[in-house]
Image (cartoon, rainbow, N blue to C red):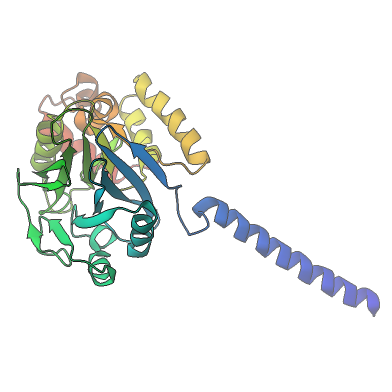
Length: 305
């Protein structure tokens, strides 16, 4: 009788300990707030960029002007974390930069505007964006304190997608570009509302024209998946393999793999390398970079790492 009772107690304890173990493992994977990555600051000469993880693999970014401490947030899908970060940093939040209308990027706009005690300017290129009050188009510009922001229209993932190129007021030092779901590290977004021609224009004409030192802050933590495809396309590209090993170490400690630079993307991102013979050969041999772009994207849509 007692033996049976103790076996029951022991089984119950074992079950609870097992459940607790898996809860701890989950916390180790996603963080104490459910974060997929650690919060990290990237300090440039004219600005500071606070990397804020959200949802399963999204990134929000708080851009802070070093001179005035004025700030803007990119794609604030988690308004509470944005507000907490702004208050802790003691900066003045004045603007919301929305890359596109998809919920995992624009879904927090209305709540942030409602929760924030001061008026916010909400920028974007699509009237499907919540709380939008500043519609922008190609080459529109505005400021964040002393920083300059230039809008790059990059339709394809969505018709109204905007990338934001941020530089110092005097044009000196490293700039940064916030690319949403157009340009990822080692990859690009799906062509939900566009064509290979449009993605070629976005990546190989507009974004490629930025200085090679420009920091690239993309919308998701997709680096390892994208680099696996990049290696599949160019197995002899040593830069890709080196980045994979670096990214594995970063992800093992839940550190973000962003940012990269425009110059680096030209070295390892197959979608920015559609002029290269090695990439064209993989995509079937056509020398037209736009045909190559379309074939790569179709292959990537069904690629299993």
